[in-house]
Length: 283
Image (cartoon, rainbow, N blue to C red):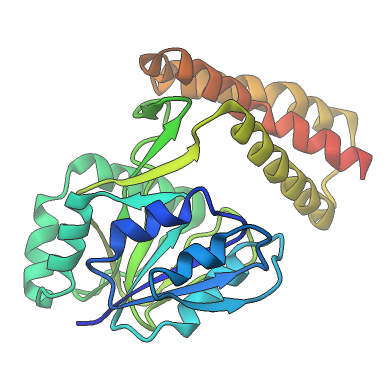
C-alpha cells in the first residue's frame, strides 16, 4: 500500500523540517501546497523530494489542505500540519495499519482506549456524526498532544484532541466552509493509539499571534451569519460565554492539573468569545 503525506504550508520554515523528518521513512510520496511563503519553507521541503504546488494563501486554510489531498496519489493519505510531528511509535502504527486487512483493522480497534471513543461521542454531538456504521474502516482519528508553553497539555478538555488525519484515498474530504469542520467520511471511522505531537504554541507570543488571527476569522464568520448586535447577545458573548468556558475547562475538566500552563490556556482561550465579538462589532 502506498502512503502519501499531504500538507498545506505558509511560512513554516521553523517547523516543516521537523515534520517531514518524522515521516520520511514511511511516506512514499509527499505533497505540499504552499501559500506563496516568503521564507525558506519551500527550500526545506525540496530537500525531502516533496511535490510542491505554489498557490495563494486563503484565510480558510482548509482550501489548500484539500488541494494537497486532491493531488495525492497514494492508496492512503496522511494529512498533517507543518507544526506537527509524527512520533516514532505513531509512525510504526501507521505503517502497520495500512497493511492490515479489513478484518485485522476491526480486531485492532477493540484495543483502543475507551477515553478516545468517549471523546468521539462528544465530537459527534458537537459536529454531527462523522462516517457511518459500516464494517469497513475508511478513516482514523489521531490523538494530539498539544505543546503549550513548555508542557504537553493533558487536561482541561484538551486531550485527546482527536483529529481525522489518516484515510483511504477518495474516502474523506474537507467541506472548506468552517475552521472547526471535520472531514466528511464515506465509511467507518476508527482511532490510532499513539499521539501526534502538536507544537501549536511553544511560546506565548506565538500563541497570541495565532489567537489574534483565529478571533479575526471568527469575527468574519459572525458577520456572514449576521449575528445579532443586541446588548443581551453582546453581554452573553463578552461575559457569560468566557466565564462558562473558563469554569468548564479549568475546574470541571481539571485544567488545574496542567499547572500554570493550564490556567493560562483556560483563561486566554475563554477570552476568544469576547475578543471575536468585539472585533465583529467594529466590523
